Amino acid sequence: MNRPLNLDDESHWALVAQAIPECTPMLQLSLLESLQSYRQLFDSSEQVADVSLNQQLQLLRKEYRSGQWQLLVDAINTALTNTQAQTVPITTS
Image (cartoon, rainbow, N blue to C red; front, side, top):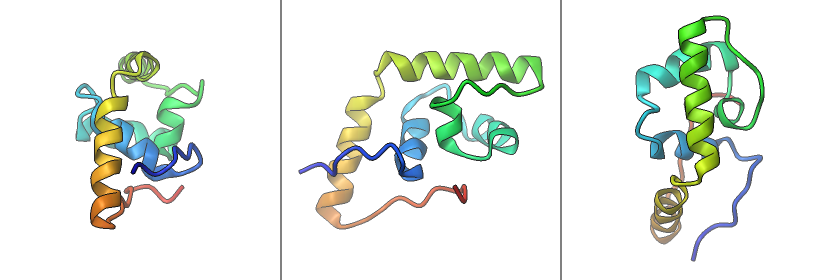
C-alpha cells in the first residue's frame, strides 16, 4: 500500500528529483543553493540567476510535468512503506 501523496512533504520532492535521470546530484546541489528546497525545483516559477543553470531548471520542470517519474516514485514509496523506512532529504525545508 502506498503512502498518500503529500505535496507538503519535502521527501516527496526529493524522491521526484531522484527519479528524473537528468537531475544529477551535482545539478541538485547547484539548484538547491539558490532555491533552498526540492519543492521549489519543481513546484515554483522561481528562476535562478545563472542562465545555463536556469535552462537546466526549466528542462527539469518540463520533465516533472510529463509525469514519467511517477511510476518510480510510487514503487519507492511502496518499498518504503513495506520496510517501514523513510527518506530524509538534504534540505531543511
